[in-house]
Length: 289
Ligand code: ADP
Ligand code: MG
Figure 1 (cartoon, rainbow, N blue to C red):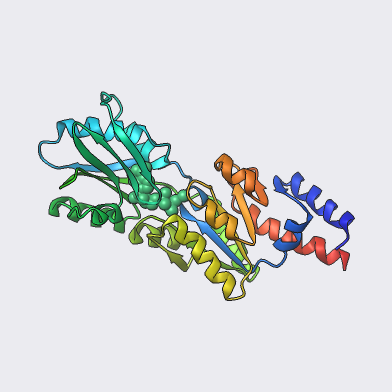
Figure 2: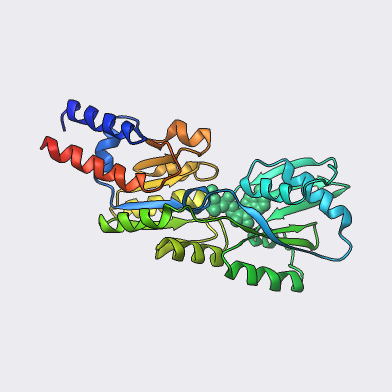
């Protein structure tokens, strides 16, 4: 490919809201045969809201503690939990910590508290309350994300969050399939929620309960099978996978880290720009030959 033609291709992309970092990135895009998509914030809007919640008996102070804990995290799930508890009074939290792909923890009133998924619970040997567990199972079947709230011994609440699929997701996946590209979805979310989101988006290949570092390992595995992988994510906990991919794609509303390192930045949340970008690269290189 001549430098001039590639520059023209990059210019064309820019006109369509697709910012390609350099000529080499545009050349790689043409070879992409596998696209890996993060679920939250990439396939979905990334604006979850709490739609169901159940509390154990005698947990009045617990609400304030959950509020205070989640207030300290910038994760979209945390923001949604905080909003749903709006009006609670803040309590002092020490030793706050984010556990990527699992949740958060902190100390308040002399105890350690956890908010996150079931992997976080089992890691700390906390067995969910049977009534709350039954509710959680039903919610997961409805594609909802489940967030547990627990102290060191027991679960005090379970919340269900819904995050709508972007209107562009199913169309983008169909277009990628039409181009002969294999599409994978990766998520740290539960299997039920993952299955339902994948189904709605028309994706048949997905992995649930994936930790941030495992996302990168998954991309590496595909590459070792000879695949050329593009990864699209919001960078919140997929920056390692983005760095591993042959082509990293950041979506316009992603985090600053994702935008800084990505080889392609899409200036909107529209996933159809991904097949557009691959097509642009194929056409640019074809013209040159
Ligand atoms: P995704 O891979 O879909 O972007 P994450 O890796 O960020 O999701 O999170 C995986 C799961 O861990 C979430 O579905 C949620 O159950 C739990 N989790 C992560 N961060 C938080 C948090 N700040 N508060 C509560 N739960 C969380
Ligand atoms: Mg994410």
